[in-house]
Amino acid sequence: MIPNIATVIPAAGVGKRMQADRPKQYLDLCGATVLEQTVRRLQQVSVLQQFYIAVSPDDPYYPALSFLQQGCFQRVQGGTERANSVLNALQQINAEQYPWVLVHDAARPVVRLADVQMLIEHCLAQNVGGILATPVRDTMKRGTSQIEQTVERSGLWHAYTPQLFPTALLRTALTDALCAGVAVTDEASAMEWAGHPVLLVPGHADNIKITQAEDLALARFYLERN
Image (tube, rainbow, N blue to C red; front, top):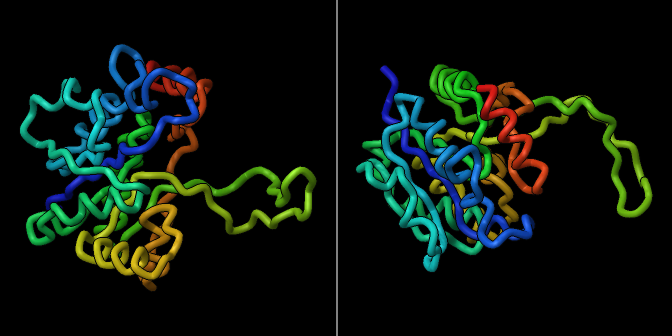
């Protein structure tokens, strides 16, 4: 039996690089906001029943979102960093009611449903948290204005979301990592720091994150195809 899974979408403090009049999660994407498209995609996964959306306290756009008419959404105060936003949400989740939590970027609206379901199946089957990822295919270079080193790409992966972990373990890992001053770039990094195994579940490279204007056009292309 698949347990109940809570979903956290950190959507605070993003969108500053799009040179638009509003954060990127509120830009139009095929007739809805990016955040609405992301939520619609995840709602098609039946085991994701309760959503916690972390937004800035003074966010003027959130109250107008269409999905808020449903009862399965809870607004959470966003923090200064992604890790703080996710932890704020985790502190609102009953780990007995929702023993697993799925965290997904607000700006990844075209993740494939099959990939989300595969992540859930693999993690639950092994009782281990994990992330969607794809192997690095390009030659990797390290440097600033000039190449300093060619990095061996064997064993390197692009880390995506969703990321799925046991709720209580992730809450403790994030709390301890932040208290220790660890740089937490995603949920997996906190779990790694805490010594917990993290599965790499192969997904698709079209699970793009919208960070530039051209990404919005590409997301539109993928969304219209799927």
